[in-house]
Image 1 (tube, rainbow, N blue to C red):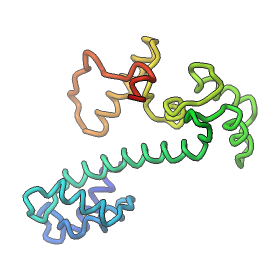
Image 2 (image 1 turned 120 degrees about the vertical axis):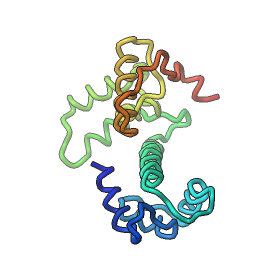
Image 3 (image 1 turned 45 degrees about the horizontal axis):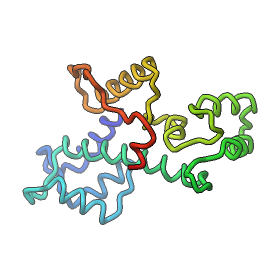
Image 4 (image 1 turned 90 degrees about the vertical axis):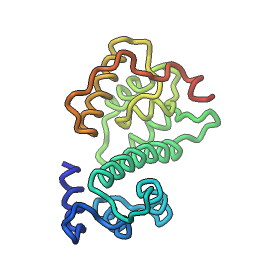
Length: 189
């Protein structure tokens, strides 16, 4: 779906109908595709992609650039949102604070649902939501994978599905050992 939208934007700016756009219109193209990069970000992207200084960009480079940027935007959103809630010195969100915020949202989430969500998200049961737990709650991949083989299998499947959809590859072999961070200490080092 996104790829089709990106293709339409790209084609509309391909004035010579030769499968390329000028790097001069990259910022405009990205904004039409739903991104809002700064001038500096665009210049960094041009330097990264246009290594031969040709001044032209093919669709595949444009697509990869937008997909990569979209993934970075999601991670930044997770971090910014987490920082807004995380007020303690340990870098966690107290479950009671999260409960308070969710209780006061428009649309009134029932207390029972909030309690269930917090129990589900707070994997170690310490009454605080870590960044990794928060990411999962927001729909991201976990940074810390529990020693639960079923959970690891589900994560591997999700990663493979996302890779297949992002890279449009149908023949991805299942990895023998998907590397994941096993404990919190690895994150802090």
